[in-house]
Length: 495
Image (cartoon, rainbow, N blue to C red; front, top):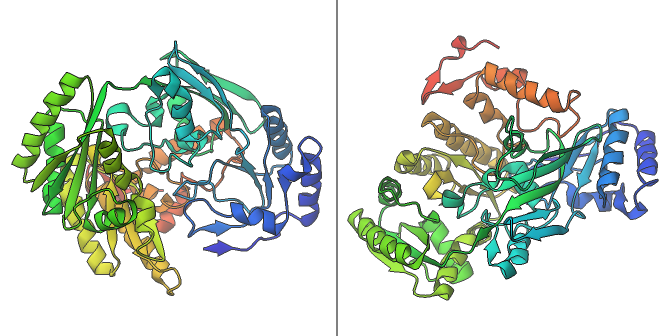
């Protein structure tokens, strides 16, 4: 969905704004030529593209503040962007606004081993935090599959998770401090190194706000001691539904794995061909279940969960014999997204979350929808917390196939809502899921979202048109809502 630039703002205004930005930023940090703008036309959701009006790459907090004040004075909207690895179009630029890249904010300001915290700028890569903390025997727990490339700013904006979020939480559970700037350029500090602060939980409000409330310029994150021992089991299943039921059984047993991931046959084959992780390519599904902690508790947990998995119908359970094998087992899962990309010219990565007890039911529904639409779907997901990532394979060069793919993706998300889930677990809403937000939330709830947005950004200049739909848009979408797992008749909702 590529969109050409428009003349919503005049060329003269753009030239004038660029000139004023260059008064306090290097000329090379203010981009206006098409060849310079083109790399910023989309994030990881490449089906949606739009050429930015201006791209700015400030290097200091002061420059960010001056840019925001300048744009505020002229009612020019601003979209903040991190590494561009997001998968919901949250960083899709505007044709009449500034794309504010925070890529140059890439310094780790402090690692404080005594308080087990790190203070970092938003452009710091996720994995770089753990690398900096490693000499102190510490690490940063949230580990998205894109952790080699994704930045902490984007992780906070979308409330990213990762394969170990079941035990250690999402980004929101691992951030203790945020500094952000309002649209008027005011710097606000929330939290710090303390584990908790009095008053409203504004840290949680900012985490996952998708750049709609403020531009975040600094974070303080928790660091954890590396566990004494970590060991992973790979369970092989002949039926994907049986694997789904096994996930629920593990959680019901009282054990809390560090990670509990699931892949179906299509994803297994792709990952094995790509990463050579030793996966059984004939399996209908595999579960990766990792335990960590003291040596004694890991040994006990491995023995008990292995017995449980076999009782639940696993055809085979492998246990990593050393650290190299553990990392190799995870390498296939971490590489699943790029691996699936080799199967088709394009794929559409969905992100919905459901109650774990409905895993088997939802997987059956995805399989039925895949057949109905004639599009293959590879399933890779964080099974332990019910966060699904169906990957729909398609060819954008075939007329109408992208639209068919979007419709299939929408059906999957709507079924997630129907069983009591939500439209996103860690990728955010962006532009991708605005329609399904109309199904998940009532008029009153949507109005509250807009009221919160107005409290921080009354003129709606920060990342407009993302994440929270207008009521009129929901009316156009169909005015359907789902409550308590039941569809509510449109006539019962008033907009």
